[in-house]
Structure formats: structure tokens, C-alpha cells
Length: 266
Length: 347
Image (cartoon, rainbow over all chains, first blue to last red; front, side):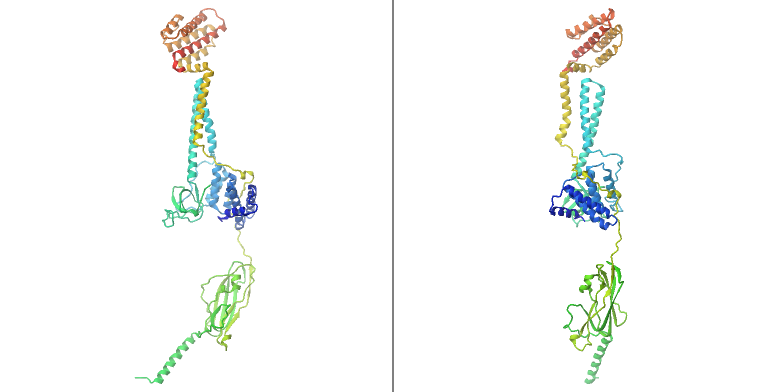
């Protein structure tokens, strides 16, 4: 199943019309998805079509197409093809581009419900999002676009106050600079989070029953008694010798084979 | 006591005969089966005797990919010298091509002393399997007069089968309805790039540009509007600011009262700025005050002229319109005093 996207990529390049346009690849993806929809009452028949659809969508992603709608379609196709780890990865990628996409957020939450966590200790279960759903995620670009005018307005107001000595200008300028400072601080936190994400990309366990170990090899003892199943998310810390060290949501750290995880590499 | 030799030989013969009879009583004799003459293309059952073979299957109507039980029954017509072994049906292409044949660990069943039953589990590979083919049973018949005809093959009758298509239970794709929604349109092909924070250089430029622009603006403003700049500087003096505000408010009064008010406002200002001790100073006293504080003769003369004008306005008949120059003169005097007494503010 995991080779389907690769297979489609090979087929696309093997075709005489190897230079299929993005539009044509999209049409194929949509056709396969619709066929899967038609056969949705029989998953054994429907899943291959959803897999093919995901393969075509993924081909678009490899070509550099990036947007929330594509990642939503890609995630849905993977989810319907029973490829939960790739579905989770796609939803995460879409949310990075469009943090306010409610459909993506709901799809991610639904996909996470399918992950089988350890019944004893909830190993790897993501932290609950306490953020109110109505509170929008302000895009960083918006923060910057708001901070710059506030800063300019503050400077202008203080300069004008220096000229005419009116108290209102002083108060207004100080408030504008304060707001600009808050927005700039917020922006710095965002930038630091982004840097952290790039340094430690998202990792999704790709198969069931992966034992986290204390070192990068089968000879090392297991880190936890219970294995983690496909769909468990973490962050990549190190990669060495075909093994990756991952950190789960609550700080649990362990090594897993590189082949057993999906890494959100560009 | 020694036994006579003929008697000993007779005893040994009886013991040998008894042992041979014992083996025969087991029903299986161990006489050799010749190697020559065995069929090379069929599996040999290792049986020696005279047999008949039958086969049965249950069920004979079934779905593809489901197993049936195939039983081969071998019955000895005459006492068997060697019992049949279980045949491996996978060695028979007719069976291997039509059926999946399970490894069976079942023991041979013996309904009676003369019968052996072998059970197999067969699963039709396809729906077009119509029968269980004949099973060739190869055995050695020692009762034949010539050994070359001893190996015999019995074929079971084919058993008709009716294989139905495999019924699969259709399980629908389980997912939330939102997962079945496909977003279409040109937006799916957009190439967005995630936001990246500006570089350090850009940040420094963004940080420094507005202040420098404002400083430049301020300097230009001072150059273009020097009076306004001076006025703004003077407003740093709290006394001057209050005096100017009071002058602005006093404009609503009539001429006589306005002149008195203006004089009082300027006098009050001079009390705060130059420590004037007199409530209503005369022009002469004002000249003395400015001289004591080292003010320039121009400023002193300006102050004297202002107070003389105030006295004229207060005590001589004066038109309404003549109040405006007095107001301006008061403002100019206050600004002049501020400029001369606070020179650092104008550097």
C-alpha cells in the first residue's frame, strides 16, 4: 500500500506523455476519488481507487503544488484508503499553510480518533487543544502587517507630539508602540516555533506495534513496555544509522527504525 | 542332558515357523515389493495385496475458496501384505491445479481390519472446477502370477462438484462524511508558500527606518516652520503654556476687561518666570525687572511697550478692534521671554 504513490509516480514518468500537466494529473486524481466514492459500500473495491487518487494528489505535491485544499483532498484520500499515518501527515501540512482551515482541523481530530493508543498509559496521545474553536489563529503575516503600521504610527505620533506638544499624541503614540511591541513579541514566538518545527520535523509512526528502544538498534532494550501504533505523532530529534530518535507529545523519547516512521521532510 | 541333534533341528524349525506365523497373524506381510515395474509417473501407495478403492466428498456443492472433505477408502479384497500409505495429492497435477490442498495431520482411519480411509481437505481454486478428478491408486498385487504385472493402478470415479461464486460480505468504507468531500477547482492547483520571518537585515531596516524618517521630518519641520518650532519649545514652560491658554480664553471679554486681564496674565507670568513681586507693574518697574535679569534691551523695550499699550487700553478710550494687536503683543512678549530665558531649548 505504501508503494502506491511511488508506483504512480513511476507510471507517470513512464508514460509517453510523461509531461502530463498538473490539470491532467488533478483530473485523474479526482476521477479515481469519484470512482472510490461510487464503490464506497465495498471497501475492498473502493480502497484501491482511493489509493490511486492519493497517489495522483501526492504527485501534484511533489511537483510543488502547495495549498490547503490539496492537502485536505490528499489527507481524505489517504484516510479512505486506510493509510492513517499519511492522512495525518497531510492534514498537518495543510494546517501549516492554513491554520484557520476548520475542515482540516476537524479532519485531523477525526483521524486522531482512529489511532490506537496504549490503554495503560496513553503513550503518545497528543495533548488536548484547549484553544477555543472560535478563536482564530492569526497568520504570522497578518501579525507582521499589523505590527509595522502600529510601529510607524507610534513613531509619527511621538514626533508630532514633539512638534505640537499635545497630550493626546503622546498617549496615542505610546499605545501604538506598546501594541507594536506586543505584536512583535508574538511574531518572535511564532518565528521561534517555526524554527523549532523545522529543526525537529513531525514524525508519524507508520505501522502498528513499533517498540521504542533506548538506542539505535534492535539490541537495545525497549524504552517502554507498550509499543506505539500507527498514527502516533512525535518530533524527530536525531537520525542515525537507519534509526530515528523521536520525542512524543509528553516528552517520552525513544528510538525507532527509520522505515517504521514517516518524517515530514519537504 | 544332551538333546539329540535331529530333535534340536526340529525344534528350531518349529520356532522359525511360529515366528513366521506370528507376522502373518498381524495381517501384514513383509515380503519384498519389486523395484522394477513401478509406475514412474504416479505416486506409489506402498500397499501390497489385493485392493479396491472408492472416494467420496462432502459437500459437493460449495462456494469457491471454501473447503470440502475428500475421503479415499481403500479396502483389501484379500489379506494385505503391506498396508497403504497416505498419498500426497499435491504430487498429482490434476488435484494441485484445481484445489488448494491442506496439510493434514489426521491419522488414517480404520473402520475395520481390511479398510483404510484417508481424509483430505480440498478448497476449489476457482468457480469453474466441476469435479474432483479420478485418484490413481497404485499398489502391488502379489497374487498375480507374474511379477511384472504385479503393479496395478485403480482409479476412483470422478466426483462432480458444483462450485458457487464466493460470497463476500461487503463492508463499506468507514469514515466521517467530511472525508468523502472532495475539493475541486483551480484552488487545488495553487502554489502557496508558508510564511517565513524576515531576515535580520530586514528587521533592522524596519526597526530603524521609521525613527530616522521621523527625525528627518522633525528637522525639516523646524526649518520650514521656525516660529512654530519656537512656539512648541516655549510650550515646554508650564507658566508660558498656562499664560498662553489664559490669553486665549480672555479674548471673549470686552475691551476694558480684556486689557486688564491681559495685563494680569502677563504680570502673573512674569511673577513666575522672573520673580516679579508687584501685582500690577508699571512700564518703568518692568524695565527695571528685565534689566536686573540681564535681558536684552530689545526684549526690555518690547516689554515696556507692551505694558504701556496695556495702560493705554485700560485707561484711555479704545475701539473693539484694537484689542487684537494687544493679544498678539502679549503672546509675542511671552515667547520672547521664553526664548531668551531658556536658550538651551532652542539649540
